[in-house]
Amino acid sequence: MNTLKSLVLVAALVLVGAACGDSADDDTGTGGGVTNTATATAQPTDTATPGGATGGSTVEVGDNFFKPETLNVSAGTTVTWDWIGSAPHNVVADDESFKSETLTGSDKTFTHTFETAGTFEYICTVHGQSMSGTIIVA
Image (tube, rainbow, N blue to C red; front, side):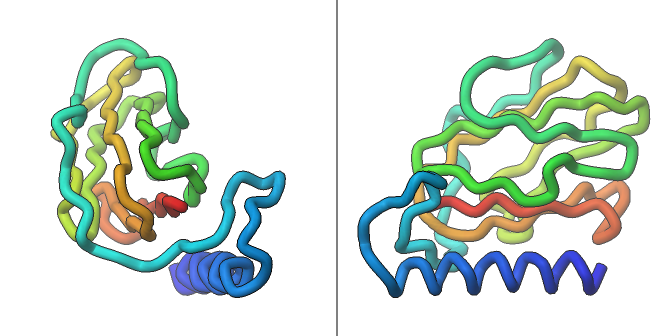
């Protein structure tokens, strides 16, 4: 777990360093101006549903992993978590700005629209810190 936190810290430092340089967006789509914040609130678009959702960016929820563990998106992006495993899992932000129900089996989804820039860490509370992820919003 320390390795994951170290990787997240390194990624955050790289993004902060990019923000201190040229203010123009580069081809990576991450741009500058990423800051840590816990002020985001759940939007009405948070949903947990059977079947796959379309649009935005997707995180796979497998048995004891999120893939990718870290996802970079722009403000206004809707992220969809797509259950592909068979065990029960949920998605809960550390700051509780978004939270899914505990869902079991594949073909389930949860979506959240990230309106504000920041770094949003989350876990599956069924499995604790061993199953965690991060959304970085620029």
